[in-house]
Image (cartoon, rainbow, N blue to C red; front, top):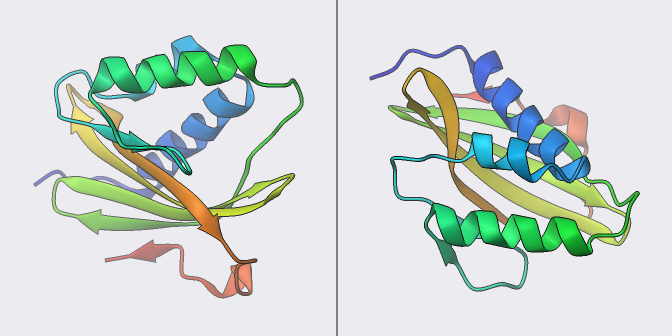
Length: 135
C-alpha cells in the first residue's frame, strides 16, 4: 500500500482542473495513467475506456470549447482507499452544478488519473461543512 499525503492527491486534482480550464491537451495527457485501465464518463456520455479514447475526447472538447468557460472545483474531499485515491467534489459551471469523482493511482512515482466521472446535481449543501479528508 502506498502512503501518500492527501495534499499530494489534492494537488493532482487541482492540476486536472487547471488543465481543463486552460484547455491544455498536453497537460491533460500527462495526468492520465499510461499503465492502468482507465475510464472517463463525461456528463451525458457513454463511458470512454482506455487512455487513447479518453485523450481523444479531451482533444475534441478543447478544440471546440468556447474561451472563458471555466469549471470551479468546490469542496474536494480526498478518500484514501489502499492504493486508490479518490477525490469527490462539486464542479460549478456557468450552466449549473455537477458532482464529480476523480480517482488516482501512483504510477512510476507520480500521481496519475484512472477515472473521472461527472454528472448533474442540485446546488450542493453548505460546502464548508463537508470534511476534507475521509479515511
